[in-house]
Length: 365
Image (cartoon, rainbow, N blue to C red; front, side, top):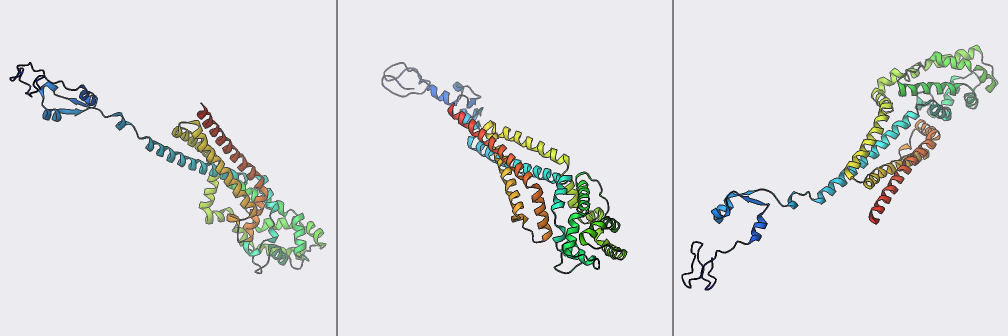
């Protein structure tokens, strides 16, 4: 303590100044020191019974400033952005996969298959591509003409017969059965030489009218011999043969286009949107992310449909058979795919506009 008159300094035990006799008053501890330590440190020893060294040894940490306990807003923003981006990409993938499953299932329906088969130009395909033994550049029509040698049939007459006979109806029935197998697991009928002989016999009158040639018993015998010669080829198209070679792929396709997978895709999309809402905590943020996923999916579907129609990119096949199949599928499905892609894109655009409107209203308020 310090003497108020002569300013001489004494320790805490002296009460009267020995120089001037003035009464000594203990120095006051600044209260701001207590304010600084209050709520941060707590002493286990009363201040009047300790010196500075013991005070330091006995203090106990009780709490920290609020700034230490509060999560840094920058870290929270990074997590929110990363989680929203990941969920948006996942939603886009789910939309595309669900659309693909629904579209594939649509192509197993009777009317879609019939449209593809009726537009499919079988006679113009290279015979070698579908396993028919013939000359190197021979088409299926040429190979059939060779099989019907002696009957007066040529490629032109065979095409006329093909267009006016029940052959296309027969092929539609076959592919519809295989579509039912993929969709519902129903086993299709086995195609045997006897099946083709029956088909040939029921179209004899059409052949006679189209060619102006009356089919004789000798012609029938010759045609039936050629049909018997391709029995091994027919066996390759049986379900058992296809499953032995492509069992895993067929099982995947059947599972992919099943109704449970479609339902799971819709449910998963709803759950992802709910997760986006939980992460963003705002309607505009949720709408922006989900709208972006839907708009992106719709634009991708439209782009893929255009590529299929033009047979470019992924659909630029080297072999004639896949090219012809892509052309027929495009003819049967382009309208449906374009409209579906447009609806999905429109839904995403509406969500983005809604999100922008909400943000604008927030700024105005």
